[in-house]
Amino acid sequence: MANHLSGMPLWAVLLFLATFLYSIFFITKPVKRAALDAGLTPQKSKRIQIGIFIFYLVYLAYVSVLSLKGTFDVNSLPPRVMVWAGMPLLLILFVFVGNTRLFKKLLRAITLDSLIALHIFRLLGIFFILIYFYHLLPARFAFAAGLGDIITAILAIPVARIVVKKNPWREAAVYAWNIFGILDIIDLLIIAVITGANGNLREMTVFPFVWFPAFAPATILFLHAAVFRKLSQLKDIENGNKK
Image 1 (cartoon, one colour):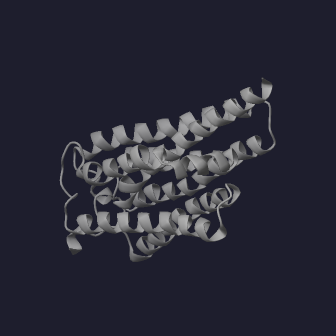
Image 2: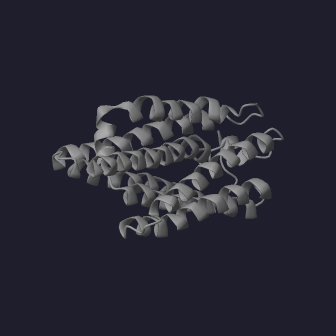
Image 3: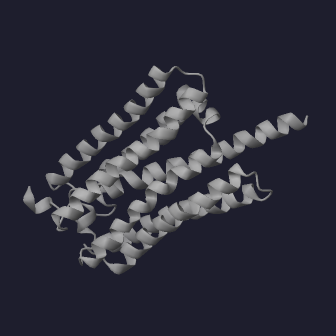
């Protein structure tokens, strides 16, 4: 089992675990707020928040067990972590969660700026660069992943403020930011497949940094898709008011 653990120092591993889990909790906070705004009781809103957090805990536990068994620690195309973890989560989010009545109700209630500000959690991308400095990731992958996430996270703050202030070009800003965030993930996945084929991404297949490829692409793409759906909702409301 020890052979499938990260080569990073213990302090970095513990810091990653703590910040990663807090990031999931951070994502659930505006969902709880949306549930309250949608007219749900405080108790039910809290249950939704806890339910999301528990779902991800169970999912990450599943990923961790497979990782510690060495399931992902092999050179394969496509990478096993995407087949066994990334794709299942993507299907759960887009096919099941995104089509539920509850999700649609929460999406109507949540504010666009809250959906955008959620992406501050992508500051976790700094760990890619940190891992590189310990010579455990190639520079091309580490900086593409790290800088893309950090830029998206930092830009989320001014874009959310532009939305709150109802700036005339807020829609263009949101579209540009959202497309940038999506392209960043797509570009990263392409680089990961190319780089991983050479066996250079082992750190992304062992515990705990396997959480990155298992959790991030599917969750981030789902959140970006939610932004587009929210924009569409707001347009429909605006067009309805004009009639």
